[in-house]
Image (cartoon, rainbow, N blue to C red; front, side):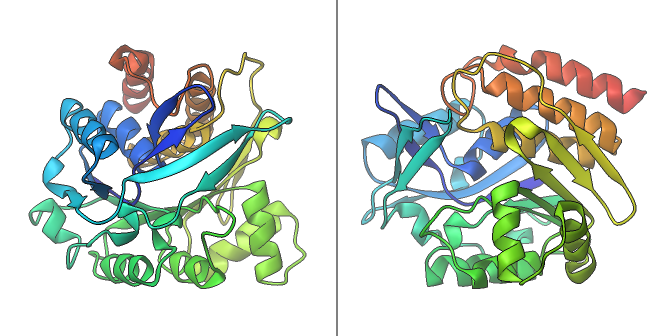
Length: 301
């Protein structure tokens, strides 16, 4: 079982809007990739929230874990394309997900069953309450439960205290090159990317670091191994959610015990396919069929 904790929101593009939020995107993908997932989140008592609730129900999520906030609106992000093919994000404050009420401990979510992995990020920790509640929740996990920290830094919506406390609970760390640069500055280190990743592994007892570098590819780094992958040449429709897709395939591959080389290949392909659709998640479940076949074949190899 995987538990994903954090925001679900609506990404508002110039011509359309889509449901998003890294924890939601991650949970949606891993569920459609065949994993048992629980998603802890909070939405507003509004039309957008009702649409999200309906979408979660339609896709088989346990909606008992979806909290309805009578005071705060469902999260919203204004997304503006930039000249480099990326996006600028204006994340509105005072969202329902800022007020998630976390269960006392992870086993309360699973009904006492074993949780293999807890996925979390930084945005849902931007308020004191969100930070304290999530960190307390993580601290009460079973020692066998791994934590996947998908750092996802958004300007004005995090503090170094958030990052440090989260790294102290991390087993799998995913971040991009800009986020690694922030950590380099934060700890006043001048190592190259691989060296810095290994310093983090050593200092925080992290098992695996995944570094994504946009068009320059990605790498999986452990204490004694390094594997990298290039990005295939493909048509890009929309890059929003590509990193979340990468994280989902990374988590699934890691839990299934696949090699770093196989995980890199599948995560790269999966995130590239997401870039060929509008929005962060596909509406058609058939999108996942080729990847389910690949996962089954890799697991049985």
